[in-house]
Length: 132
Image 1 (cartoon, rainbow, N blue to C red):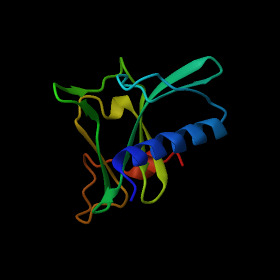
Image 2 (image 1 turned 90 degrees about the vertical axis):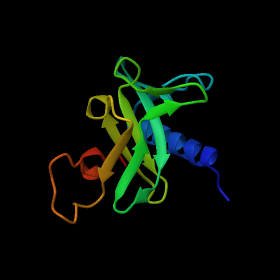
Image 3 (image 1 turned 120 degrees about the vertical axis):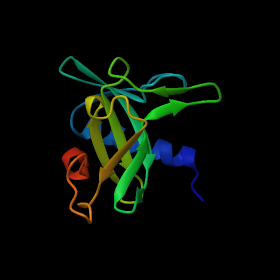
Image 4 (image 1 turned 120 degrees about the horizontal axis):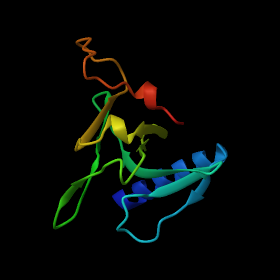
């Protein structure tokens, strides 16, 4: 059975592969204490990526956009990262979300389908963020 750490690594590797395929160079931070999982570069432009792996629940992707350990809960900021890369390990899809769309939040929710009640205000559709 696959464990959470393996799923997390699968997400990082899938995004690294897609970035490489799209001509980005990949740099991997050393250690576990960085908010950045992947650093990518193309034509002198660098982007800092935080990768999260999750699965859909009730037609939406729910993903924690914070870091926590035994001592603190920390929200990511645009001083630390440029994008959240969210990997749906069930459907093998990747979503790339600018930090500005999620900064200050503790959970990102992107809908795979329109809401059943047709609500649109405050709803983020996953199709806007599809990367692969």
